[in-house]
Image 1 (cartoon, rainbow, N blue to C red):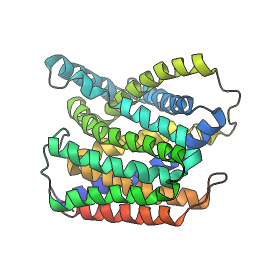
Image 2 (cartoon, helix red, strand yellow):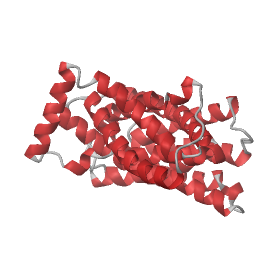
Image 3 (tube, rainbow, N blue to C red):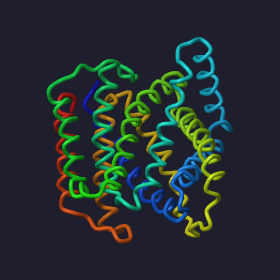
Length: 308
């Protein structure tokens, strides 16, 4: 595979990551206004699903892709549990709405970065993605380890506040799920031979998961009393479509780890830009967050060396 194809894959993942950071701010603010991160995630996923239902089953190419996926499931070429990567995405988006208003986009992103790097490394090693098994190497392990150090540095000024530490663990758990999600989404894409169908399946399973969670959540807490009037707060689903689609395309060319880390680079750049241009209310970008972000970017370079 040529260097040009790998560069295109890396660029696509970078763009998707940058949009993920913007989505995080929108979903975080939406969750803050709602007072409910799960409902914010449902709005994001539901909006994306609605757009995809308008653009996939209504086209001949989309219907053909759905038929190929159904045939692959019946023949056992792909398992049902490989089609539920959207559940991990649903959890990750929920953590955006639950924590970003308190943590800020940058700290949230760096926490997710470290976990996603380690998860992607292990997923590649196990050969769960469409690129097959990728052996462990010194630079790859060092890059993933440096990403974990970056997380520790970025949240080190919150050590005295146990509740803040717990909030940082939530996006870390979401990051672990993202590595697995990218791998299985790539397999679904191979079965359906359609990026749009894969993205539809991802949003469908994520929305279904969130409907169950929100049904319990609303029964316990009730519906939110307020919702933002500004239309851009509801654009998270559209941004999520681009993020998932670029990852599905890129994972075939550069593997789960490099997709994750190139996406991470985009997230970090986007997150810092969002926190600088439009900081969260009461939030302030700290020096340790900048240092942690810089370390995470170095981790991307180190881990990518064997393949780029």
